[in-house]
Length: 72
Image (tube, helix red, strand yellow):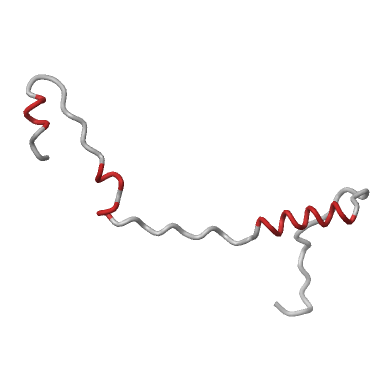
């Protein structure tokens, strides 16, 4: 950006009775929040996914005990 372009203010004080300490406190809070986006989460490999650790539901009804031991 060149020096001739003007930007709109990021923070505008609406209360005319605000003290310099109050303005400094608000600026400190907003600057502590930061403006950077959170880091993207890395994808989990299939071998480490928690869903693989879950057991499938056992079938109900007649013959359910037999099919509970058979691989799908």
